Image (cartoon, rainbow, N blue to C red):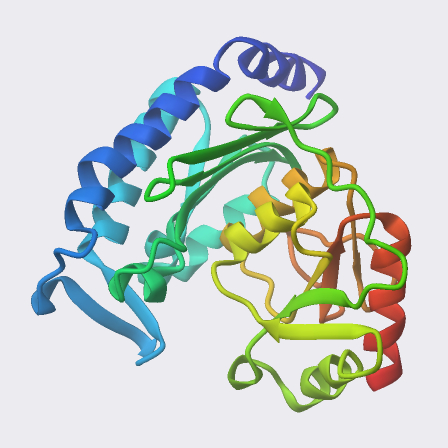
Length: 281
């Protein structure tokens, strides 16, 4: 495995721009031509009316699956749409091969409604550790890249999450109550208190970017799908932030987390939000 990790390190030292190009190309050829141009037959429901998939999701994931494996031979892809078609493919996240975790259109609901608040998320992981991530908002032409131990950049400029302003209410993006269990609802209710301003989240990837930029203080999410969280968790970490589950442990992309969990601008804020979530249980 040491040789494998050295190979990954070498790849990340020299090929991150190639991954960026693949992400941008997928968006330019498969996503943006369909933005605000979707026909009814290009939109389908998966589990319900709020869980949508479009031809842009499918085609962009197909493009990225081929391109990313070609860039890193021996790697595998765990994509949201492929897992929906065959759930067993999700298990590759727990394997030893390098794995690309892909959400082709994070914020599909926003995309369908013609809102610019969507992004493409790609993360490279191995052995359960996220090593690099790419968060691209094509309608806003913003690209954030993080490499473990090497920091985070937004459009080439360093990202630092900083700390919340003392005395100001914490702004926290939270899971929608419709997608939470009763126990998770009780935990999230702990955020409805003085000094905190909770709101419903949009695209998870863009909420993580907002935390990394210091524009949002924290998130409080109640689901584990790695394609929603892997890229953003590393982005927040490399920008100086922290993440904790209800058990007081860092979030694991391999699953089995005590939910909800938080990602925050700094460790103190993560502990504060965790305390509120724990108090609601």
